[in-house]
Image (tube, rainbow, N blue to C red; front, side):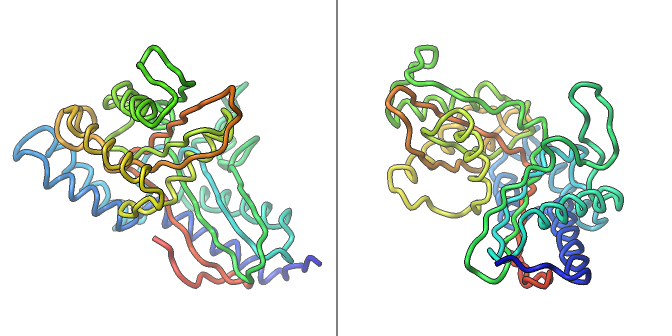
Length: 301
């Protein structure tokens, strides 16, 4: 049986969502910062790759210090929330949307969402299809709130392959999947604001593959895939992509990718899709455990 949140609880929950948005927008998680710094150490001294990563490092530090958006593009606002099953999901959705409006008004999100038919911007970042809410009830008595802000530049260079694909010489196996991943990197060059991270789904249909590929960005940079073959595929793709010489922002260098995250979904025999989502260096991802009273208990990243 659903319970109603008091006005005080609703207010507290909204404030917590606003803080999740602020932190996601302005502060890169430490695992991502460490990956950027690791890439910086790999680049040759006084090279264009080193220069690009130093600018990125300064941008990261300045955004955190001033608590201002890390990127001029708010991008797609993707919420992944598990909530107590007694809580009303419809009410939760309304609170999240109000939080986006409030965060935009405070300047934590830039006003980037426009009507696709008219091009008009209502200045709230709320409209048809945005923010994107993945809300799932569960038996626990707290909320697991995760947020990704995915910029349009990196969204533009994602890709989906239907195997077999003669264009890249990819068959229906992991060797073919790897060819697709590396082709996606080659096609992106510096357009996705690299160094980037790839989320990849093997299988599914066209929509579930793309959607689930973005969920891979909820994984931490240093984690290891529980599936041995996929773990090996991830490592090989990062290594081989970084041997392409594309480098940060496409300026050349050793740091083209910071990571690759791969998972597999069941598929129908007639289809074999490989869905690749690209995340730029402004890897804005955060999460928090929130009590059913709306208070933030701890941060996940």
